[in-house]
Length: 478
Image 1 (cartoon, rainbow, N blue to C red):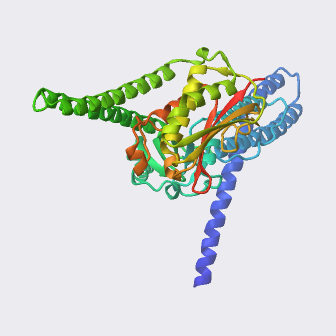
Image 2: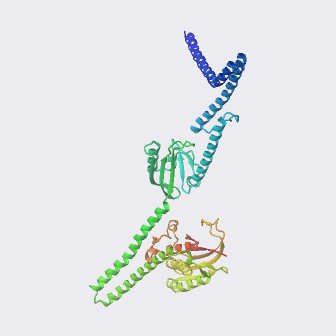
Image 3: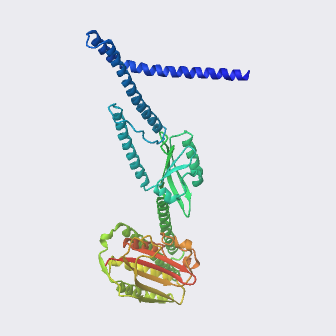
């Protein structure tokens, strides 16, 4: 019974195959016949007017029928290949271009036109890819499984060369990022903007946009992620906020002291000569403190507003250093310090702003006097170096000679954490000596601003064994 059923099914299948073959063959001959109707009519008219015989007419029609069949076979085969090629491209499959017949059929024109358009698309795609590669911000593309299928050069440099084909959520482990990504992939929304923090050696803040593509891209990408690093901007805003808060606090404190002293002098101590002298001295100290603060704030403001057109003085560094040392010798002696100046070479002249460089060196030496060890020597040294130090970003690019001015003192070292922040405005070391020392917290910020204006670099090294050294590097244009 089973064999009979199988045989019956095979017979039914063979019947349908035979019928399908017959219909395709009939359609093929019908096409040939339709195309030869004009020839048939012409031959019929020739037979009627006795220009040819019936046998000649049948012979001519048979020849035309065969030739038309061959042409149809070739042309339709080309068109089928062409249509199959278009379908593959539409599905994102880059198959090999089929070879088209270069004869009289006309399909070659369609093929050539399409291939020209395809080349234009390919060139445009390569151009768009190059543009994406050169974007200054990280750009990623992900597929439906949230795997990274494309990353531009900045993204690879920032997040690593091995991020391709990895789940993007494994790289950015942030709830806001994951939620936004899920909404995009699940078609809940087309575009999401958000801000998140990325933890690496440092913490970076990215303003990020994830957008779903209108169609699946060639690399199966369904969404694009564009990230803008706003860490520097956020840091600037925070520093700006801290600056105004600290400036207000630094001015408020002496003003409050002055107000209390004036009130006391007008009231209980009105006729107390001893108290009046004591309070007047305290008022003078607080006035000096506010004056120094205002002067430092004005210096910072002036440095930020003035451009490099004001830096055209020809400066002999050895003379400038001798002038600063002479002006601070008495102050150093009063703090039980000794200033020692070393000029190691015949130094070239420097083009810059003499007053600003004088202030920068003076601030560094003044800090060494304040925070250095008692009965110690503060060494001021100037020498000529071949290029910037290795820790400078310009070590490989800038090959100019540089003038190195260093100020060294002994005492409590600066921690690595403090070294990263000491150039911030109003930042002061949290040490007993620092708390006892009067200052505005703006001195090093002013120094850094001056050095940057002179296209230079400032560095600090500090340890228990070697003490603390601030070094200014100024390029020499010979």
